[in-house]
Image (cartoon, rainbow, N blue to C red; front, side, top):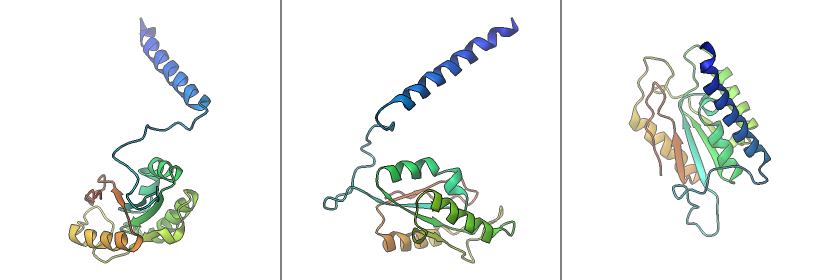
Amino acid sequence: MAWIWMVPAAGAVLLWAVSLGRILSSPEPYSLPPSTRFPPPLRGDRRSRNVLLVLAHPDDESMFFTPTILFLKSKGHSIHILCISLGNADGLGDTRKAELYNACSALKIPADQVTVLDHQKLQDGFHEKWDHGLLAELTMDQIQLWDIDTVMTSSQSSHELPTIIL
């Protein structure tokens, strides 16, 4: 009777293998169907958007946004990164900043489209609380600088970044 659990497990593995085979053998790039929630902008014939990803600290681009970045880049959208802190809670801020630029380079995001802040009132740490008004002000500066259409962020931070979508 101990082998009974193997039947559903084998079924799940078989379903996964068949699904993966369909994706890999498809002649068309496999992606989600077009969404009305992400239409092209109403600016002449320009079909791409300027997207700003607001990150709490370096490595969020890799941990939370890589699939999103790859999808948006594949559709021709321009990605900009605003990283609120160096992630210096353990004294590794400069290392983490360099890693962010390296990750962005690997994701084909130009270095001049990446901004990392080191604001006195926005330092990394488990007990740090960030001023949402200051975050909004700094984000708006980037929105105006880059003519941003869409802002995306993750609220999974201990800093409770507000989700802003334009």
